[in-house]
Image 1 (cartoon, each protein chain N blue to C red):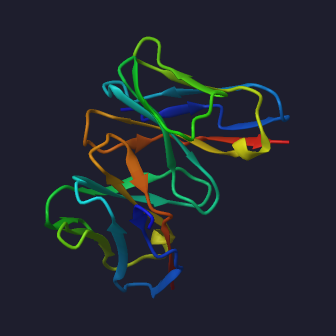
Image 2 (image 1 turned 30 degrees about the horizontal axis):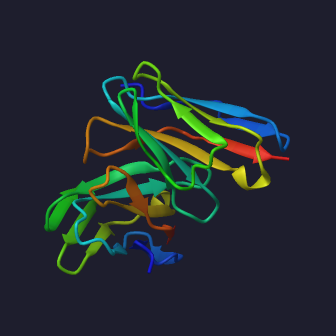
Amino acid sequence: DTGVSQNPRHKITKRGQNVTFRCDPISEHNRLYWYRQTLGQGPEFLTYFQNEAQLEKSRLLSDRFSAERPKGSFSTLEIQRTEQGDSAMYLCASSLSQDQPQHFGDGTRLSIL
Amino acid sequence: QKEVEQNSGPLSVPEGAIASLNCTYSDRGSQSFFWYRQYSGKSPELIMSIYSNGDKEDGRFTAQLNKASQYVSLLIRDSQPSDSATYLCAVDENTDKLIFGTGTRLQVFP
């Protein structure tokens, strides 16, 4: 069990640029979740997948955000035309099934200049 | 009213004492409850999960759930300085996603 892996660990970019993050879940986990966490707050749900199907998206996920999980394995989260308010830690988690504990990766910290 | 509420702390306890962390939630239909520990600059790490009323013990940690009172707590016995972190309460409102509280910062002093 290698755990949930996220890349990159840190991303610094200028406002208006596009960024893409990758998440590799624990191998047998078919559920994959994306959360966003800002300083002093708990993680906030963004979206989740069961296998390759994206089952729910939060209202937090504006049309500048898109997530994919093309083969039901790794997932990518893309943010287009980044804004200052997008600066946060982006966390990926995976679980074996519904109601089972979610295990988090180390996160990608995004800083918008 | 926030969906999951925690006292932000800091909660300061001496080494060797029992730390008691509390969490209330608003959705009566919630079925699954989790405690995560988060060190500064790190990601959340699962400590405990609890699904039914009562107590669940794992080493120095005990989770307590009271669905009638919509209350879940975490007790840490024999607290150590290494336990100093933010503890996040998370609730699954039967919607397949976790709702987190803002976390309670615990400080264990020698």
